[in-house]
Length: 429
Image (tube, rainbow, N blue to C red; front, side, top):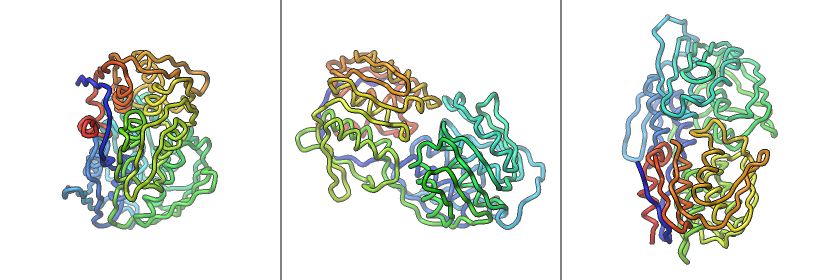
C-alpha cells in the first residue's frame, strides 16, 4: 500500500490504542491462570491477535465481547500445577507467532513448561530475527530448545524444572519476560542472575502483570537478580489494558510539529505508567514541546523546535518518532542507543537513515549515537521496509515537510496500530 502524506495542522483529541506490550503479557498470564479472565482492550493490533492465536493453540478458550476479551486458562497448565505430566509422545504442537517477536520469545519458555514437543513458527520479518539466545538457558533449566541457525522455527520440549540460571539479556528483555512468567509454575524455586539488562521498564511491566494475576516475582534494585518461588498458581482476574505510550509517542511528536494553538489532546494514557516509552515526554520537552496532563488526557502543544540529546538505550522504540522530530529541529540532535536497533522488523538504524536521506536530512552514526542534522524535510519517496514504526515516523515527519511524502509499504502499520492513518487523519484541522 502506498500512502501520501502532506503538511497539515492538527487539532482535537484522540484515544491512544491499548498497550501492545501489556496486552500480550496479560494474555500470557490469562492462559496460565485457572478460570476465566477478562481483559479490556478497545482494539487489537496484529501482534496482540498473534498472542490470542497462540493462546487458543495452547488450549485456552478465547471469546471477544465488544472491548473485552474473555480467556479461560488452558487445562494443560492446571494439570501441570497439580503434578508434572509424563511425556505421552504426542505430535508436536504448533504455535504460530505471526510477526511478533515478543509473542515468540515470551511463549517459548511457557511452552517449555509442558512435557511435549512444541514448534513456534514465524512469518514475515520475524523469520529473520535472532532467537538463539533461548537455546542454552532453556536447556540448563531442564528443557530442550533448537533453532534453525539461530532463527525461527523454534523446537522446544519440556518440562522446565526451574533452578539457577545465569544469562546475558543485553540484546532484548523479551525472552527474560517469558522466563519470569513461566518459572513460577516450575517444580523448583528459581534464581536468575542477569548481565547487561536492558529495557528495565518492560521487566517491571512483566512483574506487575504477573502480580495482577496473583504471582510473585522479586528483583533486586539493579535488575541483576530475579527470584521466583516455584509451584505458584496464576489466578483469573479482570485486567484493564492502559494506553500505549509507544504508539502515543508518534502523536506527541506529531503535535510538537503541527498542533494548532489549542494543542492536541491524547486520551487513555496513564500519567504514572511503567511503560519505558513514557520517556518520549522528556525528549519532547528538550525539543521545546509544551505539555500538561488534564484529568484523563495529555495536552501537547507545538514545539519551539530546538535540537536535543536523548538516551534511548532502554526505550529503543522511541528512535523512529524522535528521528522524525529531530528532522525538523534546526541544528544537530544526538540520539544514543543505536546498538539496540538491530533485530527489529528492519535494520532500524539503516532504515531511519535512508528515510532521512530521502527527506533531504543529513545524518551519521558515531559509535552508539545517531546524529541528525535537522532543518526542514524536503519531502520525497520513503520505503517502510516492512517496519510499522518506520512508516509511522515518515507520516509524522511529513507534517513539517516542504512537499508530500510518499510512503511505500505503509500497510505494515497493522502490526501495532491498524487504524493509524485513519486515526491520524481525524486530527487534521
